[in-house]
Image 1 (tube, rainbow, N blue to C red):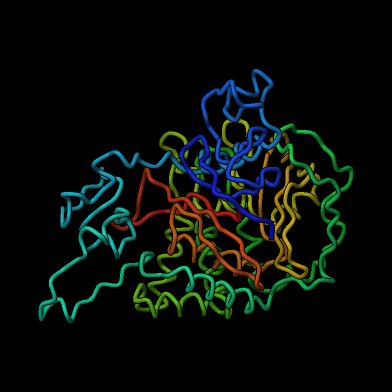
Image 2 (image 1 turned 90 degrees about the horizontal axis):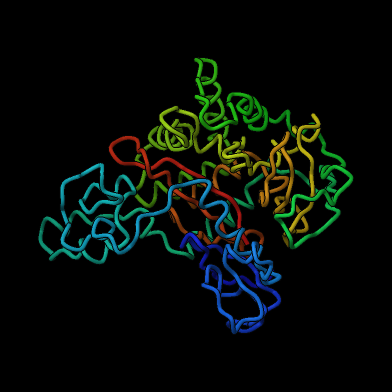
Length: 413
């Protein structure tokens, strides 16, 4: 795994990317630690959105663009930390107000919408007979980084439905660092061969049935028929039979976050399949649609992080593979690939996804990180190799009195 450095993108959101050309803290000819920096005449090149106009960008400026791309397309910009409403200072035990970006009452731990400083400012209670028998488990905050790595390794080991090495042959072709130029550098498809018997496995079969239930254009309402809702239920029922999802539920149950498996399944359905609007008022999107199916917004591809979806659309001639800018270190599946492609007329500058994983594995890893590290880099471990998952919550609407929908989730490096 290549070394990663934290980059402050133009949006103020961080993303882990590799600035290989700059070995030190900063370099005059690199954007390392300079993304969004104002024009500096002393520098050899620039790292802000004006540099493309004046053609004076550093050669690794594309990494700054990657850091901000997924965050800006998937979720509204998070509230500024300077806002009083984003802190629990002076707000502990305040009543729920849906207009606030985060909350500071005892229910916020249950609904995973506490302000970042809730634990430090509001949970320091004197030890009394009552509090001694009512120790709160704070979801997310109480899940340590080591626990995330341990659980992710278990999920990786338990992915018994994943592809074997012989099941998939990739033709990766051209590696590029210029991800934004919309140039087809690969004359051949990405997938040279896939053992289609994989898709007859129950979880794969149920997953594939969900892929044609959505209109990719934001602004066009997604209407869920009784058949569509039944397909969602069957998918969730099927993946909960797997060791991967059983292990994930076991972990959350031990942390006191879900009392029963049915409670867990009900919450999964709402956070992943609950509809919300990415445009005006239409119910035109969901976490599942964005992450696994893909959407088109403002003339470009948004989301689309499923290797299965990519394979089927490539077979239909609807996806044209252009290049890749990252190839993971794994010699077996699941692997990770970040690629550039056109989807029936629309470009995706960087689309990262697992390759060869089962649907339940993707679903479990993204759910783990969304619950444990919402809106943050979630550092996992797969087969001894480090990787990060970036998730974002949808902030405009909520479900069940303040719980958050998934806006996006994807591997980053």
